[in-house]
Length: 574
Image 1 (tube, rainbow, N blue to C red):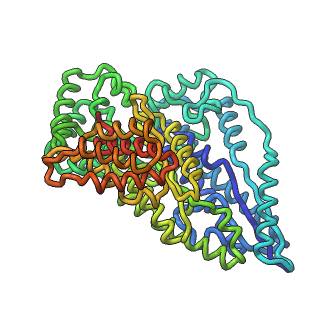
Image 2 (image 1 turned 60 degrees about the horizontal axis):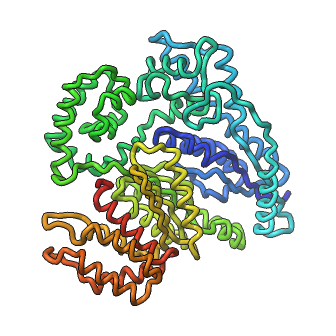
Image 3 (image 1 turned 90 degrees about the horizontal axis):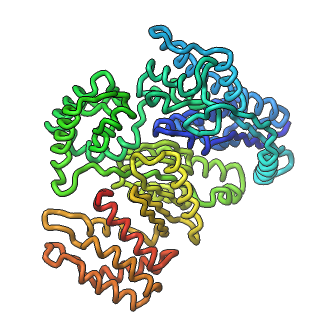
């Protein structure tokens, strides 16, 4: 009997994760993918030798699996892996259905599912996953030849897309907007989900039917995976501020006021946090309005005096560390990092040992990702070895992807590019994820890749896009941020410097000596000469000119980087 190389994969992946209104939707979506991949991988481990990823299986398993199995059993193994994946999907769906339709019904009189509801549920769950596998015999051939043949067969299978289209009628769900939202015969989708909200509260869905889920969204919100807390975008944005004030008396006083204001409408998404178990949106002044409290928490006719008292207490807390501009920052980052030319690196593996070695390195890197993300106060959504998706506060928007890229190079020997989307914490999550993925694609268009691209989407409508090779940006960007930050002696560099440099690029587009002379003039004009650490214009003019010379957009792109650095330095506040 001869061996075979079996490649197994399933989809959708990115679009499945991206169907989200909350950060927890992204996280649970990614965890569902991990559970499905792990179920299939366990079969391939038991029936053969799993090459990618390398055992033992970690908390994050990619959706593409490679194994060496018996050629005569390859179809049986592939179908067994497929069946295991679908069984796990059914288990997750059954758990969600129980919680949505039965568990809460034991103590309330909510809308019971009828034949229409059950039809929608079964139809959507049975037509979601596209599962592909391909294999090639190793009889008389090298591992590389067999792997190449299986890869080509896999590409053909994916392009065939032998899956029937399914029509979706009625009101669509609010996560993806492409499938019919769950409902029953006597109530449309909005009415049905308004009744569900009355049972489960704002912890699961928004009030009054403003959030409607299809079967896929319901699995994300109600399966057992959804029980693990994952911070909201507001919580991620406000995390540095909360870590500064969490032990302060003012925060405890503000908490008491909020608890009195919201009473039965307040839920605790993070019960493990004894200082502040509530969502981070309550740390923003803009949340403390009648409209926002009603739309987010269902609090109708809130106490106006109570709101004013809460705003006063929050103001005191927010100005403890910044008496000029209140904290926290309303902006956060969506970070998408991907290994460069991974397909080429796999194809260059001469044999199974080389592929296994690369797989081991990716596994080691994946094992360190979560720690790196948490060290930068971020939250990890997806970790596929060479593919990382995370959320981070504005202050970590650059240091975090840089640390991940450095770690990827150190462990695997390859390079990684990152896309970063800077958005307001109330910005639509799906659009934020699309911006991060678009930035990632632009980063990979930089010559030799190994780059970062940032899309900064200010709420005022001013958008910035800039790219830079990691090697060129070095530590200069982090240091430029510090120049714009204010301390007791003021700012080292006036905020106007960034805009003057951007405007200068129209007359001086090339990073030459004339441009460097203009940088020196602007630095001298806008520096704070009275500051004890006053910058040296000659030194900084040379550093900025060298960075501009390495940027794809040269001087104009440097101007955008400086405007962005100013934005980060001020925490996204004007």
